[in-house]
Image (tube, rainbow, N blue to C red; front, side):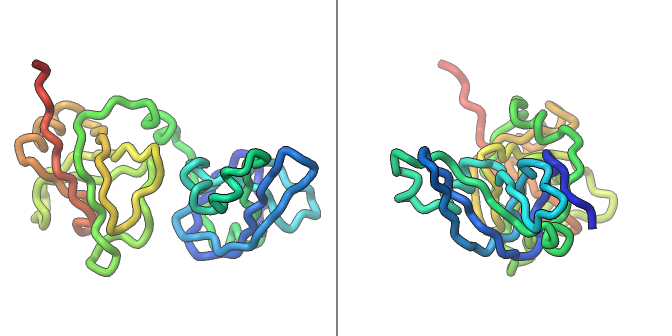
Length: 213
């Protein structure tokens, strides 16, 4: 088992027990045990000591998960100073997958979208993907919901900088395509396109551009 290093990123693949540590502007830290949901991504906060059994992490996006993991009463308290998520080091191998950073997510945080679309991920029980979509993921996008072999597709990334999108959810997002304007013009003509993962796992309805007066 590898000891995690500061800055390593993981995504939860199986539910695991963790502890939310709430920090206060006073000599006090409180904690509560939770079941960490599948799909949560986090970054190791520090190099754990050799004898440590758990390690502190920062969920990403931090503010998105803060609203889910920390009670509203605590967040509104004037003495509230933030939170961390503590997870067992042994569970990193058992329940999590380490993410190999390629810089794509960081680039997409400030990227200008090629078009805007209302993106819906199909529910898992209706053939959608099992896990949430995150900033940095890329899919072949096609104008056909059930394309034939050899279909035309353009690789595209939804700009999900404000948090993951779960199966069954819809959000208006920007898209960046490797083919840039060529892909955007193609999908503006079709009006809708589909995310392909061996099957269509979601659809994006293009938002028409508004011409300035």
